[in-house]
Length: 222
Image 1: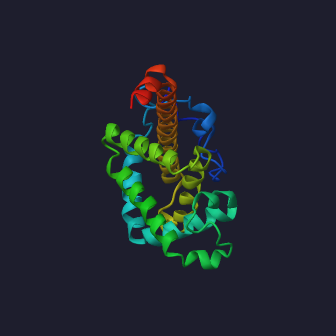
Image 2 (image 1 turned 135 degrees about the vertical axis):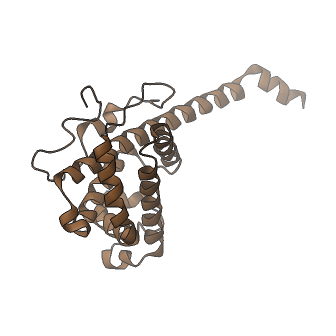
Image 3 (image 1 turned 45 degrees about the vertical axis):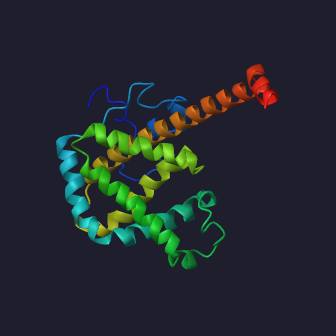
C-alpha cells in the first residue's frame, strides 16, 4: 500500500483504539471544496484480504446491529458529550440510561449501521463506495453536523464490536476496519466541504443578483 494517502500512522502499533482514527482523517487535511470533482480522491487502501476480513466479521455483527448502534452512540456521548448537541431530538437528555431507551437514538443507530452495511457491500466497487460516503458528507453539512465528529464514530464502532466478535477479533480485523473508516471519514469530509463551497457560491450569486442594478430596475418596473 505504498503511496497510499490513508495508510501509515492511522493504525497504532499497540492496537489500542485512539480518540481519533488517524491524522490523515482530520478536517485540517481536507481542503475546502475538496470533493471528487475538485481534488484527487483518496484511494481506498484496503487489500483483498482485508475486504474478506471486513465482510466475514460483518456477517457476525449483522445479527446485533441494533445493539451495536446503541452501544456505539452511548459510548460516543460518554467520551465526547459535545457531540450530543448535534442531535436536537435527544440532546437535552442527560441521563444515559434514559437515552438508551430513546427510540430516536435507536433509529439513528440503525441508520448508521445501514450506512456501514452499504459500505461493506460496495467494497469491490470503489466508485460507488466513494459516492456513498461523499453524498453522506454533503447531507451532514445540511444537518449542521461538522466534520470533527465523524472520526469518533469509527472509533466507537470498533470498541462496540470487539467484545461481540470475541476470539474472531484480531489485530488484522482491527486494521481492516480502521482502514475502511479512515477512507469513509476522509470522503465524508470531502463531501461536507464541497457542499459548504457550493452553498457559499450559491449565496454569493444570490446576493450579487439581488444587488444588481438590473434587478432593481426590474423591481421598479413592476
